[in-house]
Image 1 (cartoon, rainbow, N blue to C red):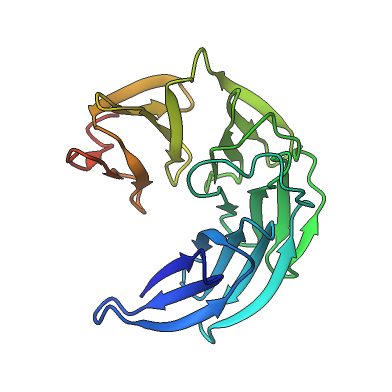
Image 2 (tube, rainbow, N blue to C red; image 1 turned 45 degrees about the horizontal axis):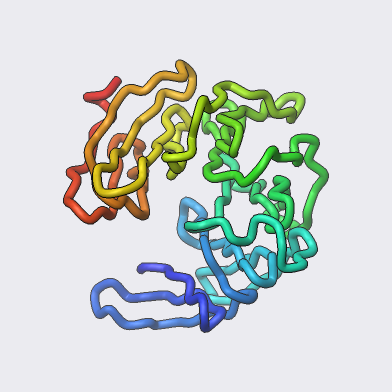
Length: 241
């Protein structure tokens, strides 16, 4: 199955890969954007831009379970962020983190109760462009307008790991599943995909790519796939380490 958000229809579409048919359309909030799936494929959480909420979806029964409001949205703030909205699911899948649409503060959601919980590290320093839990210890890695930060699972406070010198010509597109690598993209015809080792704060790979869009790491974190104007071969991280 393929799951796709339908922005105008306010729905999550379930598509049969073999036939290309939409077999189910599940109601979400207003203008659904990004989504994240549980590892077993039985649950989905969908970020809704206009209603500024998260919809919890049961993919076994194809039922809309709950809508969890984030911040009160007044039409201003970070809602004009390009690209899909960022979400991060904890290794045990009990916690969902997502930046709100107004100030971009990180909202913590209990996926069992569908309720928001207090989060000491909620204050962000600008639009968050990538966020990921580290599976080995539950720490959170995120990139915002100032740099790359880590939220410790112990005190749940954010600390900067790497600050940007200048990021005006780059966009952060993703963090690897293990939280060890960050991918940036430079804009324009003579663009590049840049791979950064987060712990070391060092660039470990630069790959030519024009007008990159929709960069994704593979599930095992060993490859990067991109949509670009000019073809770019997937990149193996083993060769970069």
